[in-house]
Length: 143
Image (cartoon, rainbow, N blue to C red; front, side):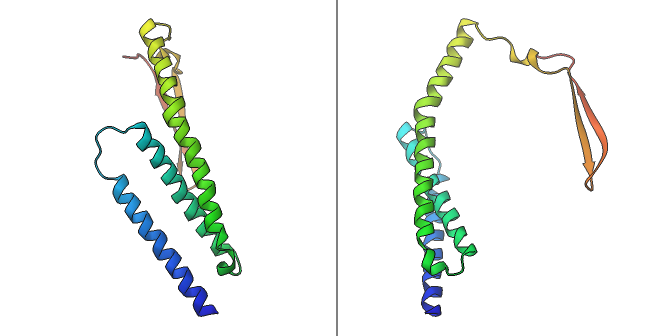
Protein backbone atom coordinates (compact mmCIF):
# COMPACT_ATOMS: atom_id res chain seq x y z
CA UNK A 1 0.00 0.00 0.00
CA UNK A 2 2.83 2.39 0.85
CA UNK A 3 4.45 1.78 -2.53
CA UNK A 4 1.18 2.49 -4.37
CA UNK A 5 0.71 5.77 -2.47
CA UNK A 6 4.28 6.79 -3.26
CA UNK A 7 3.89 6.03 -6.98
CA UNK A 8 0.57 7.89 -7.11
CA UNK A 9 2.05 10.98 -5.43
CA UNK A 10 4.99 11.00 -7.90
CA UNK A 11 2.62 10.80 -10.85
CA UNK A 12 0.49 13.66 -9.51
CA UNK A 13 3.57 15.78 -8.86
CA UNK A 14 5.02 15.02 -12.30
CA UNK A 15 1.71 15.85 -14.02
CA UNK A 16 1.35 19.10 -12.10
CA UNK A 17 4.88 20.19 -12.93
CA UNK A 18 4.37 19.34 -16.62
CA UNK A 19 1.17 21.39 -16.77
CA UNK A 20 2.89 24.29 -15.03
CA UNK A 21 5.79 24.19 -17.48
CA UNK A 22 3.43 24.18 -20.46
CA UNK A 23 1.38 27.09 -19.13
CA UNK A 24 4.52 29.06 -18.28
CA UNK A 25 5.84 28.58 -21.80
CA UNK A 26 2.54 29.78 -23.28
CA UNK A 27 2.25 32.68 -20.85
CA UNK A 28 5.74 33.98 -21.54
CA UNK A 29 5.43 33.73 -25.33
CA UNK A 30 5.45 37.12 -27.04
CA UNK A 31 2.00 38.37 -27.92
CA UNK A 32 0.63 41.28 -29.88
CA UNK A 33 -2.43 42.75 -28.23
CA UNK A 34 -4.24 41.02 -25.41
CA UNK A 35 -7.86 40.42 -26.34
CA UNK A 36 -10.50 40.32 -23.60
CA UNK A 37 -11.11 36.64 -24.23
CA UNK A 38 -7.41 35.85 -23.82
CA UNK A 39 -7.21 37.88 -20.61
CA UNK A 40 -10.24 36.06 -19.19
CA UNK A 41 -8.94 32.60 -20.09
CA UNK A 42 -5.46 33.37 -18.75
CA UNK A 43 -6.85 34.62 -15.43
CA UNK A 44 -8.94 31.45 -15.13
CA UNK A 45 -5.91 29.31 -15.99
CA UNK A 46 -3.71 31.05 -13.44
CA UNK A 47 -6.45 30.68 -10.84
CA UNK A 48 -6.72 26.94 -11.48
CA UNK A 49 -2.95 26.49 -11.32
CA UNK A 50 -2.61 28.49 -8.12
CA UNK A 51 -5.50 26.60 -6.54
CA UNK A 52 -4.03 23.27 -7.59
CA UNK A 53 -0.68 24.15 -6.05
CA UNK A 54 -2.32 25.25 -2.80
CA UNK A 55 -4.40 22.06 -2.74
CA UNK A 56 -1.31 19.95 -3.36
CA UNK A 57 0.56 21.84 -0.64
CA UNK A 58 -2.15 20.92 1.88
CA UNK A 59 -1.29 17.25 1.35
CA UNK A 60 1.96 17.82 3.19
CA UNK A 61 -0.01 18.58 6.36
CA UNK A 62 -2.17 15.45 6.35
CA UNK A 63 -1.33 12.09 7.83
CA UNK A 64 -2.31 10.11 4.73
CA UNK A 65 -1.97 12.19 1.56
CA UNK A 66 -3.32 9.42 -0.69
CA UNK A 67 -6.64 9.50 1.16
CA UNK A 68 -6.93 13.29 0.80
CA UNK A 69 -6.29 13.79 -2.92
CA UNK A 70 -9.63 15.58 -3.15
CA UNK A 71 -7.80 18.60 -1.66
CA UNK A 72 -6.05 19.10 -5.00
CA UNK A 73 -9.36 19.10 -6.89
CA UNK A 74 -10.98 21.34 -4.28
CA UNK A 75 -8.09 23.81 -4.55
CA UNK A 76 -8.32 23.81 -8.34
CA UNK A 77 -12.05 24.46 -8.14
CA UNK A 78 -11.68 27.36 -5.72
CA UNK A 79 -8.84 28.75 -7.83
CA UNK A 80 -11.08 28.57 -10.90
CA UNK A 81 -13.75 30.61 -9.10
CA UNK A 82 -11.16 33.20 -8.09
CA UNK A 83 -9.83 33.29 -11.67
CA UNK A 84 -13.34 33.80 -13.04
CA UNK A 85 -13.87 36.69 -10.63
CA UNK A 86 -10.56 38.28 -11.58
CA UNK A 87 -11.29 37.73 -15.28
CA UNK A 88 -14.66 39.47 -15.05
CA UNK A 89 -13.06 42.35 -13.19
CA UNK A 90 -10.25 42.84 -15.71
CA UNK A 91 -12.48 42.44 -18.77
CA UNK A 92 -15.64 44.32 -17.77
CA UNK A 93 -15.10 46.56 -14.75
CA UNK A 94 -11.53 47.83 -15.11
CA UNK A 95 -11.86 49.20 -18.68
CA UNK A 96 -15.00 51.14 -17.71
CA UNK A 97 -13.19 52.67 -14.75
CA UNK A 98 -10.27 53.65 -16.98
CA UNK A 99 -12.64 55.22 -19.51
CA UNK A 100 -14.30 57.29 -16.78
CA UNK A 101 -10.89 58.48 -15.55
CA UNK A 102 -9.84 59.42 -19.08
CA UNK A 103 -13.08 61.35 -19.60
CA UNK A 104 -12.50 63.27 -16.37
CA UNK A 105 -8.97 64.10 -17.44
CA UNK A 106 -10.14 65.28 -20.86
CA UNK A 107 -12.88 67.41 -19.30
CA UNK A 108 -10.45 68.88 -16.78
CA UNK A 109 -12.43 67.72 -13.75
CA UNK A 110 -9.51 66.07 -11.98
CA UNK A 111 -7.26 67.95 -9.65
CA UNK A 112 -3.53 67.60 -9.86
CA UNK A 113 -2.83 64.59 -7.64
CA UNK A 114 0.86 65.44 -7.36
CA UNK A 115 0.02 68.57 -5.41
CA UNK A 116 -1.75 66.37 -2.86
CA UNK A 117 1.50 64.60 -1.96
CA UNK A 118 2.92 65.39 1.46
CA UNK A 119 5.75 67.91 1.46
CA UNK A 120 7.96 65.90 3.86
CA UNK A 121 8.24 62.12 4.01
CA UNK A 122 10.17 60.36 6.81
CA UNK A 123 11.46 56.78 6.54
CA UNK A 124 13.28 54.77 9.23
CA UNK A 125 16.51 52.97 8.37
CA UNK A 126 16.72 49.53 9.98
CA UNK A 127 19.87 47.46 10.28
CA UNK A 128 20.11 44.13 12.11
CA UNK A 129 16.53 44.42 13.43
CA UNK A 130 17.21 47.82 15.01
CA UNK A 131 16.38 51.30 13.83
CA UNK A 132 19.71 52.96 13.19
CA UNK A 133 18.61 56.19 11.60
CA UNK A 134 16.16 57.90 9.36
CA UNK A 135 15.73 59.20 5.87
CA UNK A 136 13.79 62.36 5.00
CA UNK A 137 12.45 63.33 1.60
CA UNK A 138 11.45 66.94 1.13
CA UNK A 139 9.24 67.74 -1.83
CA UNK A 140 10.16 71.17 -3.11
CA UNK A 141 8.50 71.25 -6.54
CA UNK A 142 6.55 68.95 -8.90
CA UNK A 143 7.09 68.81 -12.63
